[in-house]
Length: 497
Image 1: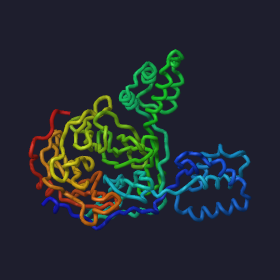
Image 2: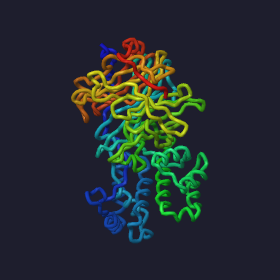
Image 3: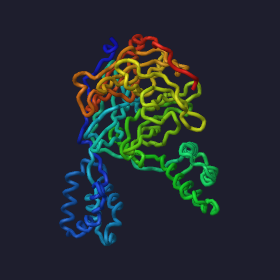
Image 4: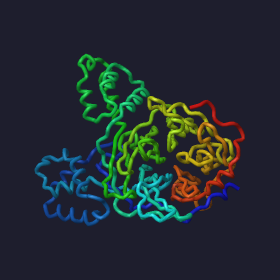
């Protein structure tokens, strides 16, 4: 029985409502018909006497000061965002400005609703470990009020043997702050091509841009467009489209003294305003050294888009769009290295079949080759990957998820040829892991789902979300897993990618 291969660990991670961040709060803007009440609130705070203002501010810091990092700075920032609502902002005392900032702030519990869909990679810090141990970084999909998802982290130590210890997740959280980014011209070109934006204005801007450029250079080139081009009827629309495509890339950084488990990647642009979902992290290695990469689903409330993260140290992240027909749905997972000179990714462009896509010279992910379609009873609704492929001597081990009756998710596995990964050489005949009687109940019942594990000491270490109620962990001997696989019942794969 394939279900006996996986050994569940007793350790689980559960949603913690004490993990909170501070967000801007503007009264009236969340109503069905938006009508800001900001000016009236600012006026009421401004009319408080000095003693009352000081007392309220002291009470606020007493209640919330130890729950957040630099609450003073946050209140200053939120005041700056609404200061235009004050009748005479220059007349406001410093304490009044701080109190205005407090009234325009609120706590948000990032994982109050659910914690799920983890991925696991080697941690950048491997200091102070015993022989046989490995420190890992775990990404988490954390869901709060309004089903709004963000990306959080945890750290753990694996080994020796099957020991697993998760580092405590205490301390105030910190949201990544926007920082300067060096934009990529090739990504801008790919984005404009996907939007079918090609006229003399866009061509002139692209021709003037260097391969890497900053925001000031971009705006300088826009400002320097010839009047004859700007006078064209389509010019303003093209300039707006250029700015929108350029803004799809950004960067955030965290304080150097913050711990990994305190960092929160929070939606930063309109395309991800309703959530950053299901990050699949992988430690990618090439001639320039290791870099952490991840794909995630951006959701704006109506549409989904696949986006990418890149970081050398899990402290500063560059965030970019992904382009091309190979990434037009959820569930993209990158290979940890180039294969035969090709950068590859698993995908599910049709919503139900695992495919393999290749990045072309124009930074577009090509139309995928089909690898594995729904066939077994436990996966007849759809199949997808559970993270990036894991390199083994036997081949690329791909953990899969399948959806069966009553939308029950279970985890399986297939094996791809090491040199020609468009060929499926083996598959697990049954599910590796399925919801047990405890795991079936939760925020989203009957779902086991992972965004990626890793191999350490000949064991597959698999973190997984259980019905979005908790994160569990399982281990599987790699040799036993491969031995339990069988040749596919029918040929898989197709043309070369």
